Length: 123
Image (cartoon, rainbow, N blue to C red; front, side, top):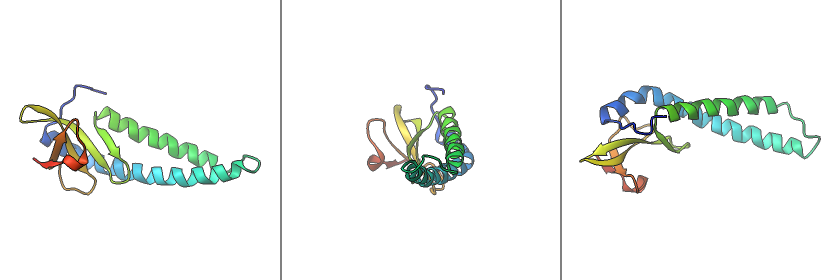
């Protein structure tokens, strides 16, 4: 991870065609993992075996791969369910988070580094 990576709005927007499908898959895998985990937990109350253990392991491995990709891009995943992402950026000479959420057409908001989604401001 490039901890010093600073995104321009153009760079952040250029990443969206790759980021959006990864976030959709990540959300799906999280939901699947939660469902499988519940089944495995139920099986553990019996003899501990479940045919879903392998599926769960595969799902969790894919989640790890997707999280690693986000880490490589030096972006912050804030919320899986909505695909809320922060890109490190600069606005008016100040280091900020460029804020984007799955479904938005482009990166169009920012907020100070010490504040969150509720403080989003238009670029």
